[in-house]
Amino acid sequence: MARVSKQQMERNREEIIQVSSRLFRERGITGVSLNDLMAAAGLTHGGFYGHFASKDELVAIASQQALEESAARWQTLSQQPGCNNLATLAEFYLSGSHRDGAGEGCPVTALASDVAREDADKKICAVYLNGVTNMLQRLESVSECEDESERREQALVQLAMLIGGLTLARATASSPLSDEMLGAVKKALQTQDKI
View 1 (cartoon, one colour):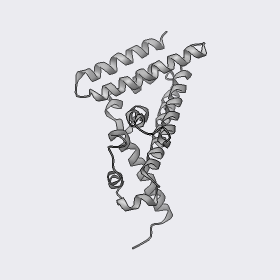
View 2 (tube, rainbow, N blue to C red):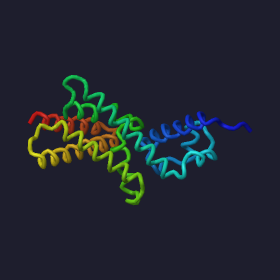
View 3 (cartoon, rainbow, N blue to C red):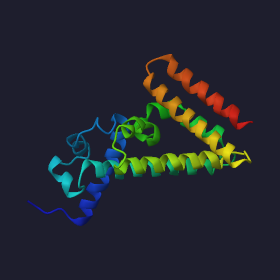
View 4 (cartoon, helix red, strand yellow):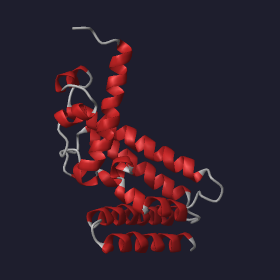
């Protein structure tokens, strides 16, 4: 049996992380087995522990990568002229494509229920909290509110509306209620942006 080169090992590891990031957002952390992950990466189950100490380690790494990708998408969008505002974020976040594309979407929404069920000392909880904090900071950065405590409170409400709206839209995706949910929350946030 031929040994795998270091470069191939690194490519395999990156593929596992990429596939896991997508599958965890699509199916949830507990909805994906190690067999599922390795098969989706085109690798055998036995090779997993050559890359990661545990599924928990992979969950934290894959989630961190997903959060970084999400932040980079917002950064790219916000650098376009006239787009660094709440209305643009709401339009993007509460879109049908984001609702329907959980595997490529925001991990803050996709992983919320799973993370809530984890023991607080697991690494994924710290990774997730950091992602929520970064999203709050993004919302605060587009606010025109002068008062720091009011700006923070607005960002908390806006985050809850974004996450809650998208979560409910995904949960009701087979019904017209889903589009209504996206539209109503988007309109409420865009109205806030004009205040």
